[in-house]
Amino acid sequence: MKSLPFINDKLNFYENKEKESAAVKNKMLSRFTFDIETIMSTMNKCIFGQEKAMDAMEGMLKLIKADIADNERPLYIGLFLGPTGVGKTEIVRLLAEAIYGERDKFCRIDMNTLASEHYAAALTGAPPGYVGSKEETTLFDKALIEGTFSKPGIVLFDEVEKANQAVILTLLNIFDNGRLKITSGNTELNFRNSIIIMTSNIGAKEIMNQSVGIEGVISYEQNQKEINKSQHTQQIIQKELEDTFAPEFLNRIDDVITFNWLGEHSVKRMIDQRLELLGKRLKIHNRGIQLSDAAKELIIEKGYDMKYGARSLKRAFRKFVEIPVAEILLQTGGSSDLIVFLGDISADKREIIFRPALPNQQS
Image (cartoon, rainbow, N blue to C red; front, top):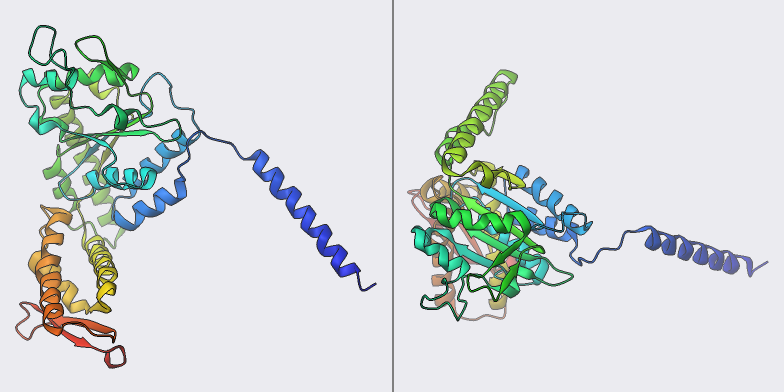
């Protein structure tokens, strides 16, 4: 009788193993090795206030992971609209980091450098008979575009609205059949395993007008006004898109996503994120850092500019936090004791004053 518990444990063990084995058999195998939950978790920690964009990214990753996307065109073609500094390019960097382990592991084409018609050759190579035709020189990086069997390539066309229309039309072949032949005819670039993302500042002013005051809406009437305002803004942006790009270009895009301006709640979360990153760097010196709520408000009030988004916040954080902390770090020298820098606003409310304190002295 004493052996029964052991036998029951063994039976339960084998029963669970059979269930796990069945679950593995039923789980779909994909040639792509990236983990969707890991990528989305990484993005949600770094991109704030862009729920629509996050939903689109998750949908895109599911479609690619299931390997049911059209195999005769790129895996995904997205157009990200919105003001500067709200996360459009950062999403691409995070995607590259999550898939390849490197933030710059993608092919980036700055379209603002292709404003003249003859710059189309920068994408397709110089025509036969022209200088450079034999070298097949192009801005595209073949390896980054094509990726690998288990990992998609990533391509970013940044500020696409600034490129000449001849350059834009060059992209149609890529969007149509996922291939681009270099003008000399000897080389072909394959985009059928690529995630293509374009960014544009079209409609930035309208998005700003829509976003002002949108956080903190409390009544049904106010909410309805914001919804109507948003719909009207989208109509304006759509018209601007149609005025800028040809219909055949827009029809080949899978998603057109409008990014929001960063509201106060999102900015506060970004400050906490930057504070956490700084804290990790300070650990090397056996230091820590804390900011009061008033100090965080000062950074937003004095340094954050809605027009420039996260970039202005980064500059403000550097001015009010990183530089003062660096000065204290240089003055205090090394110490075996953990010292935490406590930051609060000065008496005149114009700067943040830091005082070093041992952990048991923190207030």
